[in-house]
Length: 327
Image (cartoon, rainbow, N blue to C red; front, side, top):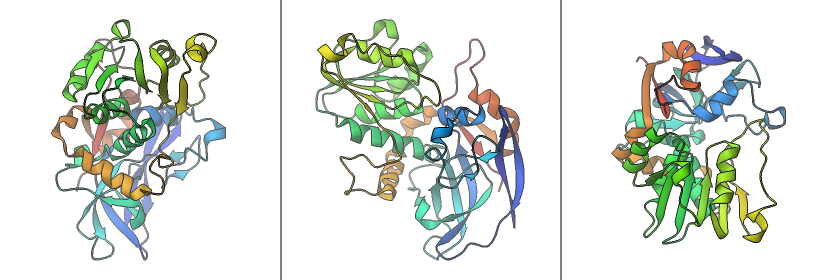
């Protein structure tokens, strides 16, 4: 049996490669892919060859092949149908942290059943929702807090979606693109441009992957506010004005990253339980505003650089491009 997989081969370049699949072993599944999602921030760094060498081990996807910078088979948002494996898995739809590939073998321990209420195109958000969930666990939000989320990308919007369900919370999503207003409001959040940003925010999630965004967080934080840095900057250095209000306001600046279950829940939830919860949270149809455009797998090498690059004048950058696979 053979499969086709997407490989990044040079800066801005990729190709589909055919590979032979062995039969699944004990505790493994053969999965036919139905859809996969593109994580624009991380996969942009991979496509451009900008993963720092110091982070090559930390950045490895669970079922990645090849090594950074190139050639590498990278990705972590696949939804598929189990064709072979233990009887209790066969015929189930699963989410798996696997690169873009039309069929693959994966350990059952790395697969999570997709709830019936979550369609394929929304289930590809599983890894992003898991990240947003971990951010919220790390943030430990409080009832009635003033909360600012900076950066209306997929992770920022999903974090806002979760935080907006906290009773009494005032959640504002901030972005430089006014066209993100529709998605923010559809997910239950207020929207603001930087010049209209609310002041005195008690909890700030920074997810814009820009130095300007993090500096904005410091400038708009209330006394003893908590700022969580959820961005991945790759090899880009960031300069911060830590000599201004940072000390006087007793601010907390803390990183949050999905590789480890949040300390507040570690020992209570394992990675698999966290992913199962994340997938269940995708049942809300309002989240469809994050999905698209949709493109066939065969077009991925030609179109991925465009999807990950800056949008054309007058166009808005996609949030989560969805790749579909012919049966």
